[in-house]
Length: 395
Image 1 (cartoon, helix red, strand yellow):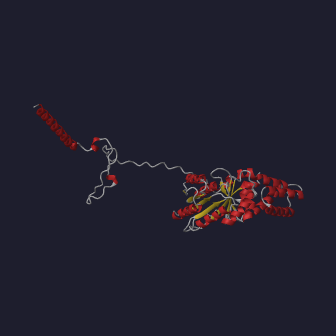
Image 2 (tube, rainbow, N blue to C red):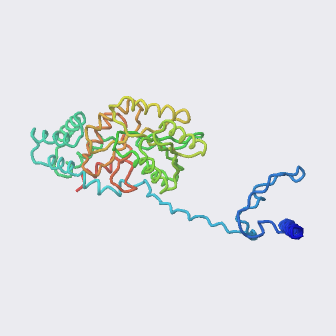
Image 3 (cartoon, helix red, strand yellow):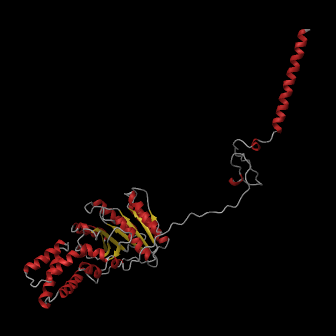
């Protein structure tokens, strides 16, 4: 009997457990979905699509943590502040404004020559002193001999009755030597179909990248649309420096990967200039020693590749004026490789000797077009022979 009672109790317990299980199953099915509980991560819905309804776009799929989505609000877009662009100083008159600085650094030559020509008696010793002064100022042997002979003739025929007359004779002959009839304009005018392309070359450390940035400022001041090409791919600092120069005046810079092909970057820069109908593209190149044949050949390649897009309007050779006669050797080699059309003399305000202007022009047969007279952003000026000579002879 006891066994029967025990069996009945066990059966009742089993039935109760089964009932509880069924009730739990039913209740679980009746509970709201997990997403409505406000907790947990929502898995994306199964992508079971109806052909009639079409696919569910990404925007329609729920996102977030499961909390109810807030009502859509119309947000005001706040534009980032536009950087203040610098307005470069006009190119016209820059050399005039900087004349006093040039006079302070270069007037020793002119004053010395004037003092010697104003002597009561000009003998052979005086002429030798004049010749030595010119050679010391890096004028060069050929131009020095020419100037001395012309001065001799003028003094013998006209005489020198006063310091003022001596100054006028010297000014006239220096202007003749520097050259007043040369085309010193930078060819930066767009043609009907292509932008002007200015290729800037030179050895290491002459200031090519800075010159490119300052030249961009000169052209922006003339209301030209400029693009910079950072083809000095071997120095990341050069690329960053050029881009900074451009950003200051709102000029874009085309760049490539560090160590990339310079010709490719130059090509892309000119291509951008053509497509955007820019006025000027300025291409900065890597500094290279004139004695490195491979690097010089690469420079020739850069120019040839550019010309597949547009003709090169100017090839400006940047020379550090403080290097003196060493700059002439560099100039000869560069002129042979890329057909230099103009000279940029940098650092003319420091320890440079002004005669290098005469010497380099005679050596290459191309004019000095721009001179750098300081570290300021607007210290690159078009070269004006009259202002230069007057600075040499300044009191």
